[in-house]
Length: 345
Ligand code: ATP
Image 1 (cartoon, helix red, strand yellow):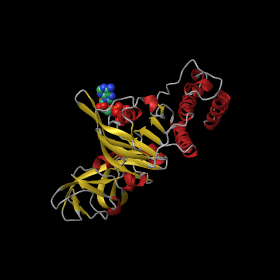
Image 2 (tube, helix red, strand yellow; image 1 turned 135 degrees about the horizontal axis):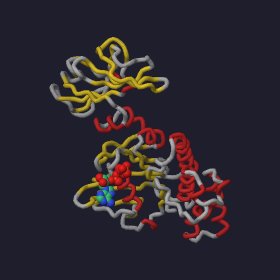
Image 3 (tube, helix red, strand yellow; image 1 turned 90 degrees about the vertical axis):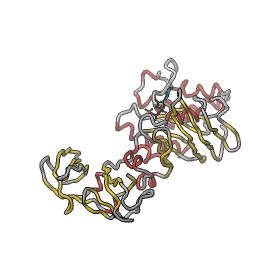
Image 4 (cartoon, helix red, strand yellow; image 1 turned 30 degrees about the vertical axis):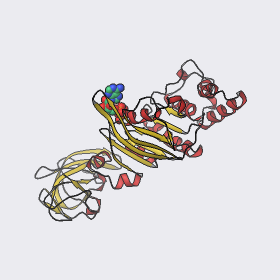
């Protein structure tokens, strides 16, 4: 393991043919951090991870481990561990062999290799399965083997590409906690690719939100969740209502003729008269005197109803409420000013 203080990506760019898959990624990863690369399918997350791993050469830019240039080194000399979505286990080797293989390759003495393998098996709770072949394990167990195999060599950085996407919902939740626990207990530095905002928000110390190969925002879960940098990030982070409107003063807007004075300031440069997009999460839209709407769709979600409602002039809003709404119901809704973010239109 080559310990580092910071790992720096400097303008990392990767093109396929003429098209940029990743453009000018600047990022500093500090030792011990858990970084999530988040964004929709095709935004360049895997490309970024593969550039970092050395599986893809850069088209432009550089990668540095403290003062040492890294992007010119082959993958095996970077000292990183990788966990993929499809596990990539050796099918003919037992769980134990799969996990100890990397230690063997590195010439770790036998007794130490055995001790570290045992420890890794214990960490991921596979004691009872150590002698089995991957094909005899469930998806979740296979994913645990892949994780143990990556961390057993004590890599300076662990790269994970959608490691939970093949697991069922319950196991996914459990493994989130488990990966985060391993990260903490082993003092790992982790870069984790996901398109699942909840996964990223709940696991990472910092999020890097990508769209079409470009960084949109880098920040803590709170920053990204509460104050998305632009409407694309807002959209991706659950602001399902993106309502077109117009700035009518330095601090108020009109949406379909009704005025709102958002208490949070505008995000980005907006002048009076400019088109804007007001963003609000469905769970923040309240039922109470305000806009008259008709319920179009009401979906039962246990504690809540997720509803799609429409104003008389055709503006659609999504909301979540504990009220038992049904299609055709007429109610009034309000958009609490403190929950509205306003972006340039
Ligand atoms: P997903 O979540 O679907 O895996 P992603 O965010 O990881 O998506 P990438 O796999 O990094 O996205 O792909 C980014 C862009 O680069 C996409 O437009 C993709 O089609 C393109 N791309 C990726 N790999 C190649 C390749 N080997 N050849 C050509 N184009 C590629």
